[in-house]
Image (cartoon, rainbow over all chains, first blue to last red):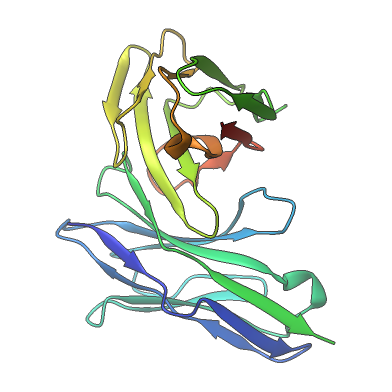
Length: 114
Length: 112
């Protein structure tokens, strides 16, 4: 069965420092997609970054990078140079091989301190 | 483009009432999804659709029904509302593949 696990309910980081949010997954699909979303206190879901299971290189989008370790089934999000506006809930998600279904983790609440 | 729109934004239902949550997208996406998000939790897939006339169950379909008569619209029907259905409901759409989903703003539903 597909499952996403985020073991850090909450984290603090100092402004301008880097932070890593952990995500591990379990799936029997031969291929899959891994996504990270940001949910600010206003409630909307904002897409951050995508990694395909067959992608050789780790995905990067601006200050976001995804540290993909396939053998360990982990897809950690790295945010460099944290900003106050990064304070939010962050969700890791995995798609089935045909992108019909998505599975979300329970989230990590990130607080950026000035 | 409006993207994904959802109505209503808020709703309070009494136990046993029924309602339909509306979702419309203007991006011509084939894939559409309904999720619920309980307080402090991640999203759980209720139903999904890969095109007009094609729907299927997600992780938590009990108590809900959907239809997809057009590419644009994907309404979610709650029959006999129960307190356990108190949640925030998100509709999303996407083109499948490596493209992400685009989420609506959500509907906050309370069942008393």
